Length: 400
Image (cartoon, rainbow, N blue to C red; front, side, top):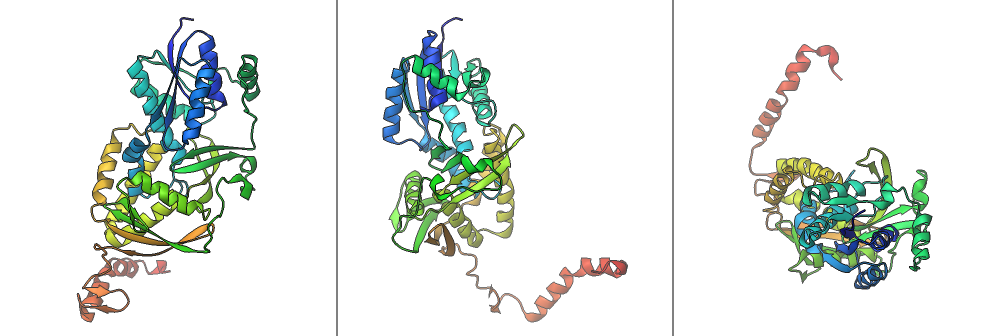
């Protein structure tokens, strides 16, 4: 086999560590690239760099695309209140797309012959990486040793040990993927559909001293600009602040069962304080600032947006069209949403907005009206009932 210039999508885990060492030992010029969408600490990134060179990489780079991830994805998921199955904030699946785009971009920049990643053949990530590479780096070979050689975990560990790289890759009960938009949890009790995750499976636990507290999130045209009176000029920092507050109450825990791209059902646990709080706060504000049909049609396209993100269709040309509609819908979504946090949960309290449509001079629900008379109300009701009166006047036997 001719020697190649190969970029490895490097997370520092077992599969990508094996991939770097194996390809380097075969004489290839290997570059390890870690695409960070907000889930790696500085300590982890430093360790990844050290390990990449120990594994035989000629070069290592961290590609920080956290801001790009927000601007091109998270922002629209907030605009759309996107939750897959009304539950999961689509964290890992949306992250993978932007990690793949960053890797493909880097591979083109250095003139790589191939891109390698550590996905197995049983999950969604292989599709997200491969599809993105095929489109964004056409002609560049895709290498997946773990998938193609159907390697076991032990085989990879043995190979690393035999070639002088000893690291603790002991199979843990749970596997985690930490990102700015939530942490996914796989394994353990989740393999049994009758069980949920125990307390020790979660990474974040109740540490808040107060039993409850108010959280105020300020939005301007749908984007977060303030948290509890503190102004933020970068929504990424605001998301991190909300995560810090919400995680101290262990908010955002749940379990999702959904359809994978490859056709089987998948079950995953997660903890996502910031997404859950932000989406519900945003939805609360929209209830008072959008018209009925704005809310309805925005929900329809937002649902498609979430499905396309999850199923590796981010590059589908319709996505910018959906984003344009979502952006337009946010022109009056300005104000502050108030939530009450408590251990393991929260409640919505209210909103304060200059665009609050409940403050109409035409009437106050259940109280008084000035925009119509009692006779006009009775006439409206009678006209509205006309189609039903016509139908049941002819089909008397169908009356319920």
